[in-house]
Length: 341
Image (cartoon, rainbow, N blue to C red; front, top):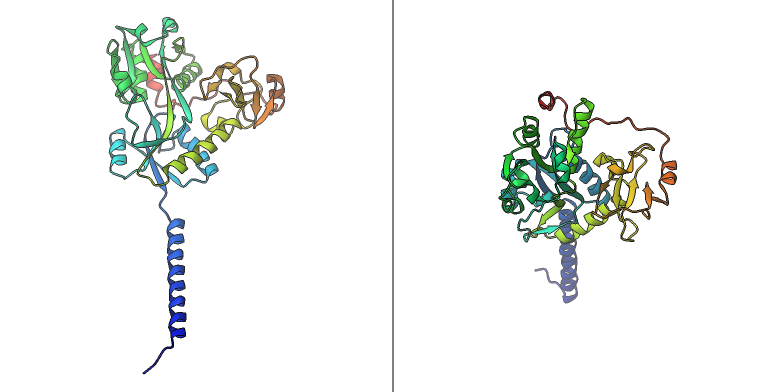
């Protein structure tokens, strides 16, 4: 019979405990190293979101920000009808292009708005330039996409004859065919159509005096995701930094952006040497925070501050832009619409 002393048993027990702890730590680290990525979804949205190689500002922008923030997030593009149920059933961890127009967001941890949406009324007729509020469209027919029409904010607007459309193309075709004299759409989409029209020597759209509604794209991560709060905080920090130094101008295909970078309450102009040229004008700048510019606005190029436009342009490559650039809307797809314009 083999006998063990008390010392031997104690030593053996300690070794076994250490081995168990080591194995547990190894398993834990392996799980952390191979943890599944956070998966966020969105529905297709022309020029913003795509999964088939079409221009997609949001996809390109977020891929850059996730890399900067060292976030392991995968994007899935799907039909709108499946998006909400996929989040509810846990197939998705949330949405990467969430737009809130009165919906209940209590089940989400929301990021800051990373790209504002300004909804304008646009028309072939210049009379739209007098429109400042939705009531000014009372009794008129206005085309709109379902993604906006099917929200609490727009369902309350009952005095307008809404012509609902499943896609951006369908909504634009309402104008082309003169079936609706007005269209409610995003500022960026209307600008892309104007580029397409101008390049085809067609009359461009007129805009309402100001946006009739403001919202924006956000990350919306389910509160069931354990690290949702920290993930959103890291995203917000990286996004703000990249906005300020101009790294988002290129994926957004915008020469100038505006934002209150220095915290003085006035928006500043943001450019980047990869996108902005010395001939790009300031009146096409896109606001990231809704704040107005003024004579005291600063200019930032590649994150460096300048006191005047002349100084900022001196820091840009000495090349002139080809004006106008090609539209992000596919000309082949819109050829029929252009012929009807």
